[in-house]
Length: 205
Figure (cartoon, rainbow, N blue to C red):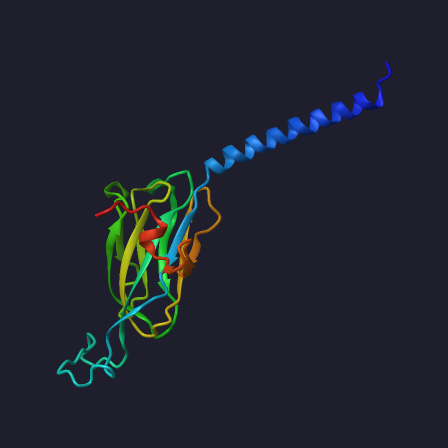
């Protein structure tokens, strides 16, 4: 049986269209099942205390061994959340999520959970290394659905240009992305600074 050239072209076109639709459907459902864990770093820091800037005040801050503190104390905010459409549950954390400040002179002196998008997130935080110079903390939670997030407050000693890294394995993901804050121009014109509150869906307080 002979087929005309137009018939063959039509058949090939239909076949390609079917393949295209099949791949589109596959990609659509595949994207719906994706987890996207993100560590958000607000690069703005607030100086809490400095021996240089507060030399006229009758305040002396010492370390645990009684030595006078000669480096500044800063406060910053970090966040952890999920941008994917598939939830991240506690059972999906295959290796602990450990957040670390990397510079040798930096040291965590206090940390806390400032807020979370919803109560069911069930965020928990604890120091990871119990050494005198703590530089890492472990984060855990019950569930992070799409755009759920955790806001963390951190007090640290050292350099205001803080650097973070994150380790951990979450089922169905290759890595944990790091997102840094920045300034963005709105349609109205003025700039705003991205922070944890406007990248995750925090409920209005």
